Image (tube, rainbow, N blue to C red; front, side):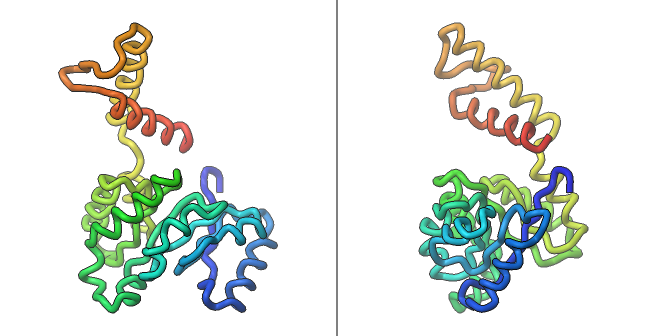
Length: 219
């Protein structure tokens, strides 16, 4: 498990006997589980963190959960958030086909996550035989601000890791931005600079720092 985090998905909080039994089981696992994944999240989940000391990853899967997403993601112990599109479509009486490409929900989840400093994780991709479609779905999610992707088949893991990990070219460019911008600040030329004919300002600098921090954390 070196470099990996073990997370366990428990039963729906709206099924108390099963939910609390699962929480108790996860709490007793040794070595400790890193994170508890909670489906159909609709309210403050801080009580789970306080009881177990485990990080929380809620799944937004209902209409009520989406409308209350801010209460969910700012719960104590929440470090990431994702969503389940099939359950959500069922919740609102819609079709999966219509909601799978829905960027309103994607933007809602990303915005809530970023507003409270947690990781947004994109939904599952159900067509496990279509790896090219899965790759394109990952690329779109990354472009919208997601940092990772749920997977439901081993064949999807390598593709997701490839897309969401910065390329060598991206890392080298990020290093150049950080070095050039920090030198400009030291020289009293903060604000915006020209790097290889491209405008680089503080926003670009922060984005580059984010790439390098991701690389540092992932080793």
